[in-house]
Length: 315
Image 1 (cartoon, rainbow, N blue to C red):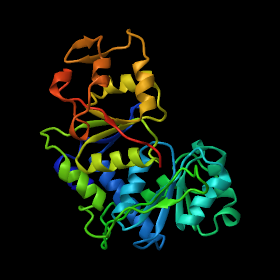
Image 2: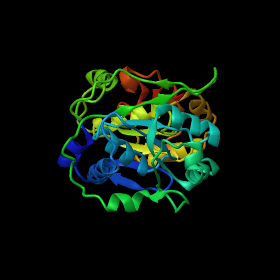
Image 3: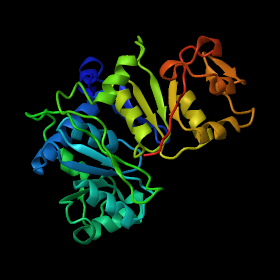
Image 4: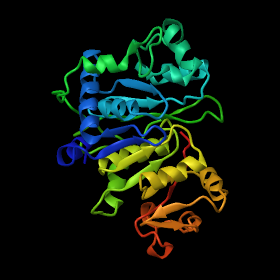
């Protein structure tokens, strides 16, 4: 499946939500935005196999930029927003990125890359800012608005190229098995995960509190959109805010790392979530139960429709 198919069947279903701000991107908006992004990439002369990079905090620009690249055959390299300018520039040069989408709220690294492009990343021909204006970068929003929302004529699937954390030296690009083809099919890893997914009458509402530049959160977003889920992200993980997001958006599963579990389990007894009109003072039980297949919770946990998916978020 592909997000555009969910846009056809349920256009108003939320595809992407930012928990803190309440910003919502519907499947119809994701489809239109990713079509405009694909049109933009083609207008820049980008062809299947070329690489773009995303240096962004979690926000609506991320899925639009990613799915626009996916449906135009491009490879997407997510870059950590915590890297220093020289570290980020190395990854951009090494992956061969031809375009960069970033924003000033990333900090000095984004500003320096844009203003010193010819010096630091000469192979990057185009830089866009998804936020406020930034010297050396074009407006991402304005560029998309200039593009038609129709599908490009030569759609073919793209994928992502993630980098390791560099703990043993320079970061290294990790290429997963992938053969370009119909955009509905995805990569080998996606097809394997979909083959094991349990059928549901109602799509999950999935919490992704980690940054999308990490492999696990990004893959969770991708798989969520392929299955028509609502993906709820956080700008920054906070245990209280995560608990609030679970309740507000009626989250049924989440992708987390052990540190997040520890911080949530350390919350005081006064921290509760509401399910079916009842306060759950023992909400920790939801966290402590052993996850079932693909993160689904066994009925014995008292939350048959809820689940926690734990995975490494290292890039």
